[in-house]
Image (cartoon, rainbow, N blue to C red; front, side, top):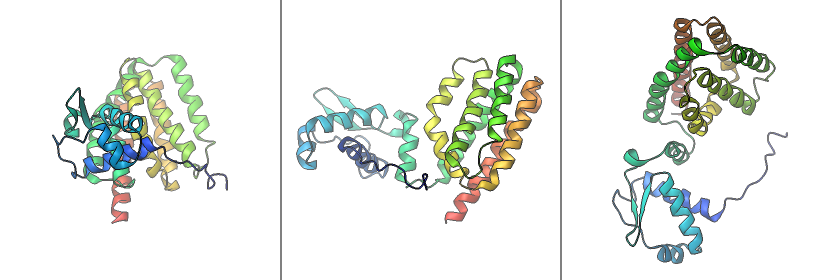
Length: 242
């Protein structure tokens, strides 16, 4: 019951503004290079204050959706060239949380390059303290209910983030953090099927064993299995929604 009765949250005017313009830009209704009305005009047309409009435009600019130029106003960008990782969340929202096959394929290809390498480096560079942390995490996983999606999301992200920390590369953990909202969006849909959980936890155990043994070849092999398993499940999920 507690999971069903989540707190009711009203969106702020700024969030509504940002969501509306994300949809207009991502749908192509606002064209690349198109100049938006002035902040005063937008405030008048939308019936909101200028500070709401300004804050909304600043957030759109931070995502790379628009460029704000002094005395020239806001210009719609080609988000594929200037967008930040936050755009992926906007794309998920635009598709009402449904997985777009092309976006999914791009994410999985990126993860295959990024996470296979972090697994290899983790096996080579992990510390003894990190091995202990991995084993503690495995013990925590075994206590998580397979229907507790939020707990599964959290422990799975922690596991993959720990791999980046064990890689001894200072940038990889930061990249993983920057993708957290995207990652958890995907795993939230993935863990909606409790049947996938035992297989995932088995892979995690195999990965910890490989990292503990400093076996980079096995670590790479296991990470590829993890990602291929995820790809297969997501494709089934997409096909099931058609």
